[in-house]
Length: 257
Ligand code: KIV
Figure (cartoon, rainbow, N blue to C red):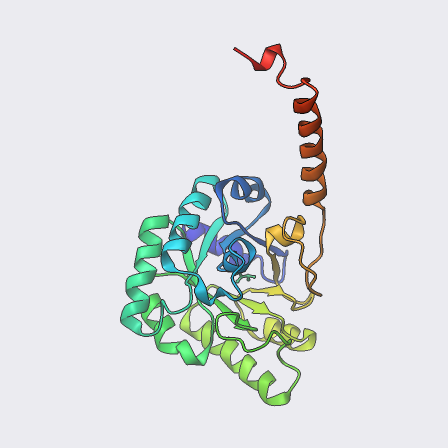
């Protein structure tokens, strides 16, 4: 397992780190071959459950989805988001992180925040729980989703937070909606990989929500690129199926007993 982490660290300044989300076995087993990291993101709250924010996602939901994802992963490093209100203090964080690791057999957990959660991350790492950081827009606490790092104070704080996370020993940091030149500066300054989402080409890697990338979740946000419209393809297949059932072309003899 240590090997998986060092493989990712070694990619810094060499080749891009590919990260995607999965919420189920079926998607996980498709993306596993292509990814370095598969993230069970708490974005599942809005993508699958239509929640207004990720704040309503529970630990149980994360664990159940992660158990399914685990079955689809052979090679990628699997990271699970610790949902909102599951790491309010060190003992709660440790108990819940241990439960996530034990029940889902994931490799690491991801937590949102920098200096503010210093003691929480320190506790987890001291207890040998690998942690991925998350800075910039933090959906679990964000009041808005405006890009971060346009104001000088914000820039300084974000850079400081990145250095703090590095010192604490997180193995990489997701930068969400971080202004391009700041993402570049953070990536140059720290020695651990940055994984961007809406944070420019300058990060060491990129993450997207798979459902957005394939057009299963039809949202329009600046940082998402839809590489295929799978919704269209599913529609075409269902129309064909409906036609064949109605016209007694399916099931055929070979589909029957
Ligand atoms: O929840 C999630 O999917 C995430 C990624 C978008 C980074 O945190």
